[in-house]
Image 1 (cartoon, rainbow, N blue to C red):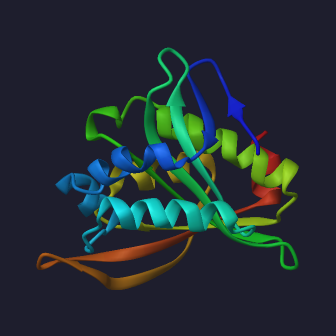
Image 2 (cartoon, rainbow, N blue to C red):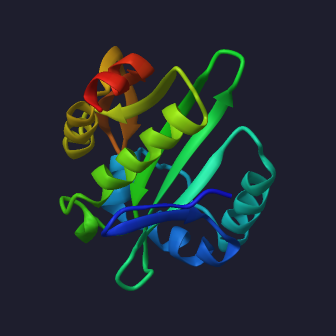
Length: 178
């Protein structure tokens, strides 16, 4: 499995030992809202999900970790990899709101973009972000993702409606930024 790093963070495969932290993160109300998570999970469900993902060759699940102390601070997934059409989906979530706005997510995405376009040799990477997640939207646009569709009122989270914004990065856009 692959490992990627820069001066502050590294990405490593998610392991069963990460399940407790992932469970804790999906119980934080602001993270649930930012990601549109409405279901509740048990530790066993998360452990089973990790084991299933480890066997799935159409995805990579990465833990975002600090170089300084090896603490896992987030999760990043490349999923639905289609080698025929050279496409994949993408999602990222930090484990604590206090870890946002420090550049870790931007760094992690940058490491993954290099992997997606230079190692996996894909032509496009897709993601969805909810309109209320302005931090995420800003980072994705800064890195070169472009809005390709907006689905109005796609999320009803505790009575609050948000649009789902579909974004895309093409290899040609990535190559121009490098």
